[in-house]
Image 1: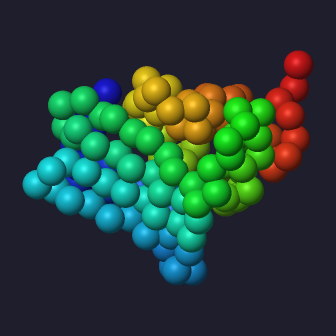
Image 2 (image 1 turned 90 degrees about the vertical axis):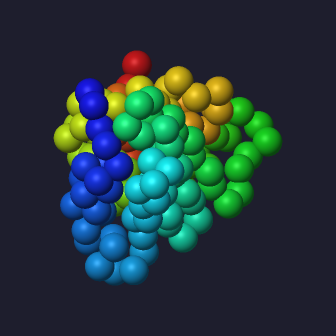
Length: 130
């Protein structure tokens, strides 16, 4: 799906409206460079390459060294409300966010992509069914 910086910024601001109003998240766009960042207290989602090819990565303040701890660290940093907002935003742009995160070479970003693609996001600390 084609997504430009203005559209992506609008979709993200709509999805994160309650967190923005509570001053817990900020959505920042740099139209000239095609970059957008969603910044929470302990995490940052960076999006770039718009409108040609969406690239994305997630960073959290306390990234774990052990791959087995990635999911719990991401869930603890982001929280359920931010995750729900990302699920909503990703659905509105046809899964482009999950696809970009999945294509990254970053395990934390790929974990977020998998969570976005999960049919029912799990509560923090709960393993996926199956």
